Length: 414
Image 1 (tube, rainbow, N blue to C red):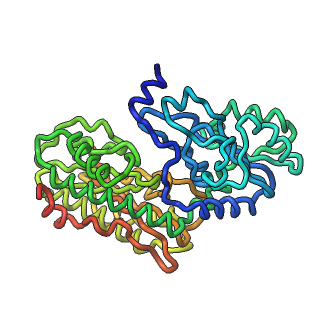
Image 2: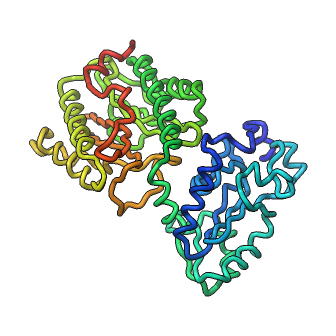
Image 3: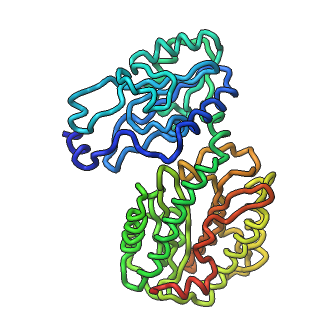
């Protein structure tokens, strides 16, 4: 019954168009192989979900294969994609999928070698004989594998080998985006910007927060994006001070600000954008003061973003700006109300895989998102934009969406 329900809710194409050419996936795997001194095994997601199939990001990054139940083996000398056998009953619900017995399986997947899924343990054992190390994707809670049962089967074949985390070498590749990836990220950015503009047009006192969410979802859906990049946040009044508020049920009142942290995933790549706006179209003097301080902090951090700089350095710049330019009711600096990180990498995931010890470098896409949240005043302000690190500095990818308070005021209800 559950599988029938899944089929009725989302009849999905089994091989999705990701927008990345097969040659680029092949080049990614070749680059990864240069860094290996053992065998990596990655498992794709097992089955479709009610909200639509989403592939495991590291698996997708290396293969572009968008069907459930596959696995990938990569060593310094070989790479194999393992596929499920044909299942006529399952295909009644989901349609045809790529099978290892298909004559065109290699050309459709872009892999030099395709094998039946059940042969993975034997092929893993054979490949591991030449090495003393193997890699698993240890990115789950407490660094536990995402596919513990499958991994335990493999561990039994190499009890004396060293185990390492596959996430680390893959993250080094994923941090720097290719020109094709940047094009897809910009597509998600542009669709999300259109959604934010629609949110300002729809905004008025008395409407529930979810109406803003629904209006934004329609915009990016109409533009061909497949899903929200994360749980949409539309927090008005006291909810504006809750960092990850996403209930979105409260009615917005005149005189309040609303934090709108909403963006889309398009062709598998995410955007992440936040704006803070006055519900009635006009910031109060205090709201405007806080807003301009947050914007100034963001501008200071963006101006300092360039190759060789660490994200923690930009964090300090933003916090110091807040302390130097505003006070709370007790006369204390506002930096203490900036209670989260300044930003993160964005790509296949909204919080994309990265090496936290690495400095910024050309080709990286990161957010700059300072915020001040003062519960006693029911004022929360966050401004979040995405930048591309260039050879000499950075480029604002979200520049088409106004950040100036006066410009935003002019667009409310228009």
